[in-house]
Image (cartoon, rainbow, N blue to C red; front, side, top):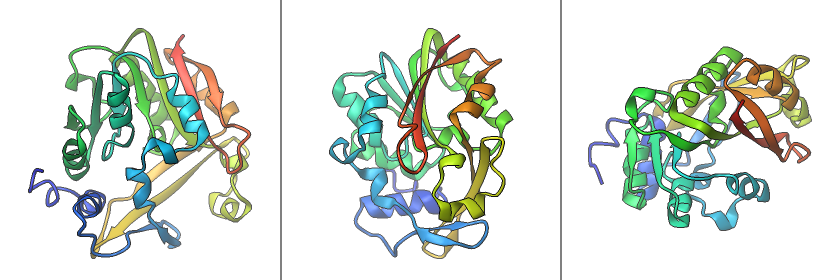
Length: 243
C-alpha cells in the first residue's frame, strides 16, 4: 500500500488506513456542529454484502454496465460490483481511502473530485453515490451541480443511484437539531475526530422524496424508483434516469 497516503490524508483517511492495517489508535468519533459527539461507524465502511440492509441490495440490483462508484471510500461497494462482473471505477478525495481500496483489491480507484468530468474519458452506464454523499455541499444548488456533472459522465441511457435521509421522517431526538424541515430539506454538519486531529467540516443535505422531485426537475434526470421510503429513520435510495 502507498506508505505516504496516510500522511496525505485528513483524519478520515488516517483512521481507515489504521483500521485496515490493525493499528487503530482510538475509537474515532463524529463531532456535530452543535458539539454532540458519537462513535464514527468505522466498521460500516468495511462491511461485506451479507451485512447490508435489504434496501441497499434492492437499489444495487439496478446497477448496470460500466459503473462510477463516486465517493468509493475503501471499496465497500466497488469490490462487490467488481466481483459481480461490472466494470467499475472508484473515485474518492481521500488518498488514504483510495490506498486502502486498492490494497483490498479494487482494480481501478483514483483520487479526485467525484463530480469532475475531466477525469474520465469514457461514459458510464451507472453512477453510484453511496453513503449519502450526493448531499455533500449542503444545499439544493450543490445537489443540482452534482446531477449536472454526472449527466456529463453518462450516456443517453445513463442511470444514477444514490441514498439520502428524509428529515421529515427523522427520529424525534434528531429533529430538534435539524430545526425547521417544513420545506422537506435540512442539513447536518460534522467532523471526524481521530488521533488528535479534527477533520474538515462535512455538511450533508437531507431531502424528502417530494423535495427531491423539485430538485431533480430542470436537470437532465427524472426520478425513476424509490427504495425504503417507508423504512424507520427516513433513510432511502433513489434511482434517476435521463429525462
